[in-house]
Structure formats: structure tokens, C-alpha cells
View 1 (cartoon, rainbow, N blue to C red):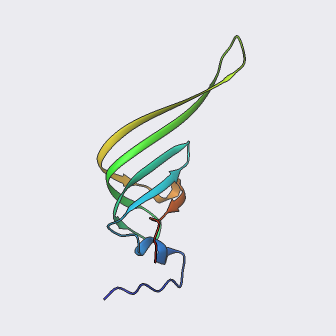
View 2: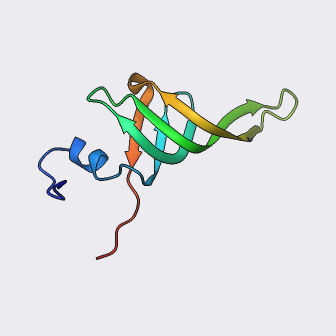
Length: 94
């Protein structure tokens, strides 16, 4: 039986298996998907993923920042742990 005790930060990831998590990546990428597997390097396999990429462009005439986001759906994704900045587990109400 899996323990619900949190002793180390990686335990929060373990408790999020088979749950939808939010992962912030380098390069202004964000992922939301179901966590299927992970390892100690935070390499992860996510399923049913929504990827959001945010880019900032500067208008050459007005020098205004233009923020663009693009979204795509990915059925299954391997995430390399060295690109992970933040992992947010699902909200838990008790």
C-alpha cells in the first residue's frame, strides 16, 4: 500500500501519479497532463497533454510588447527532467 506521508519533496510527485499536474518548463512552455511515470531526475511521461508556449515579440514601429500563446494537444509526451522548473500537483481538499 502506497503511503500518503510526505517526507521529501519528490513524495509530492509520487502522490500525483495518475493525476493531472501542471509543469512549467524552460523556454516559457507549460504543460498540463496526467502523470504516468517519473524518475529521480524528474523525467516524466505525461498523457493527454495540453502544451502552451508563450512568446513575446516587440513591434518594430511602436516598441510595444506583443504576447502570443500557442496551444496544442499531445496524446503522450516524454518530458526530460532538466527542463523542468516547477511541478504543481493537483489541488487536494480534505
